[in-house]
Length: 320
Length: 320
Image (tube, rainbow over all chains, first blue to last red; front, side, top):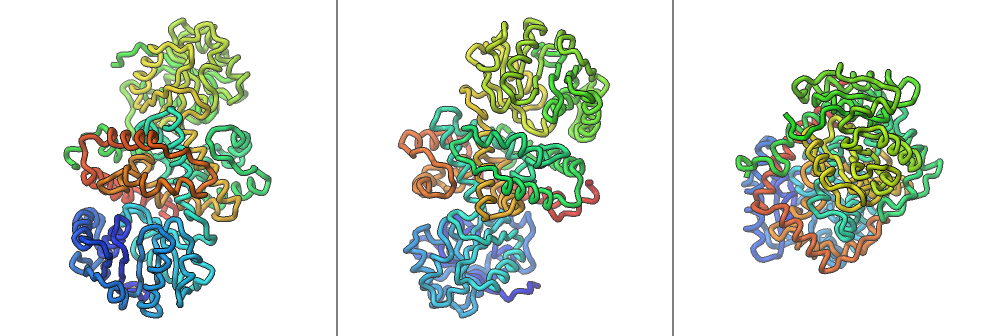
């Protein structure tokens, strides 16, 4: 059924993220072993899978998928011994993760892939103490892991390209959208974008401009509606009329100098302008602006019909 | 049908934003007069309304709504003479807007509301040259204006509170979600948040970390999925488990010091922490975390079923 060779998966560390992975792997028909040294971890894992399961059933389970294919194994060495892929989700402390990954590396099969869910640490750092460092990668997911498809894949200096390629294929096969990132930076890509909006949101509250509720409303009823369809580049490309991004950079380039956020913008050089314009044109190759607008509009209508049931103030009694 | 007294609306300036307003007002059953000094403006207005109309029909027109209730009037004074609300959408140049608003003020009925769509200028500045400055407000919409419900309402130092209250009622009646913002700042609220993400996205491209397409993918398959349902605060509140935002601030507060974006974060004082935690608790009053998670999950499933038709790679032939 899958053309990669991954059959058994082990999840190390069972907080919100680890438990999200467990639910996704189970729903996709894998045998899953979970391990975590914390007291009561096994009960929390089981409860978490129970909570996620109705959503996963609604989305559609893979053939043979079952909650019963989960086993909790408190001993780390035993838990990873037979795994083809190990997903590590320990707390974000460098020392802890390095030590843990070295121990996983020591006890795992030689060709097992070891993936860390870290958001902030770089794979070159994480693989430093591992003997078989070529199979260490970052595979950074988003909450709730059993429903959000994005996973950022990053290799370190010593990661083998074929390991990344195999991991990409695996995460694709479990209904995810892997994004292979070629450069190692703290926060990868998505968390950097989220951190920018998060810091700006904190400034708005701190400066007394808006409450948390007003900030949230300014997102969900406005820009947030477009962001599941189009990222910041395509959004602006479509706001620019027939001239697209080229027009927007001419019109709003000067605003990059204004104090509209506390984030200093990069210099809008000709090179950067061209990168952005060419990128948007590549992304929309083969589609007219009018066609893209029509697609966006149909989506926005269907989305808002859907959101009527969920937005604040909707009658949630049937849902909760 | 409406309990405000606005019957005739005039739109001054017919670019992408002005034309979006025209389509929304017409679809909501208003008589609309459009005015713009640019050659060929009338033809572009008509073409733009034609393009938007099928989407608006799909969404549902108000009783009596008709494209024929639009009239183009090249003379500004005549165009605004009988309007109950005038929506101004001139280019974002302070001198131009101030002069234009003063002229509108001079020619409009004494009790007409004059609303500027400006994203960057403050209402106190815009009303400075107006005799009846108490009826000048900012009403800042989002593209496409005929579909996105958010409109930010901001009064200047001389704006009368009852004008803002009447405007809030009016925009609500045309199926919008008005957000009244109590402080005047450049970019209001939503554009500040968007500008932060936009600048960070430009840095990522400029630093060679990601292409425009990869940045967009990092949004649409990940955080963007949540942002039409939950803003940055509620999103983190739900990622924090039963302890919610309190736990997240303890866990990720230190990350505010890390160079995860080029935006410097505010100091996470006890006061700011409490504002954020209390805000999230107010937003979710009466709902359990488990209930909110269930609601989020149901939404994410339905959203992704919808997006299958629209995401890159989907077969768009039926749509375009």
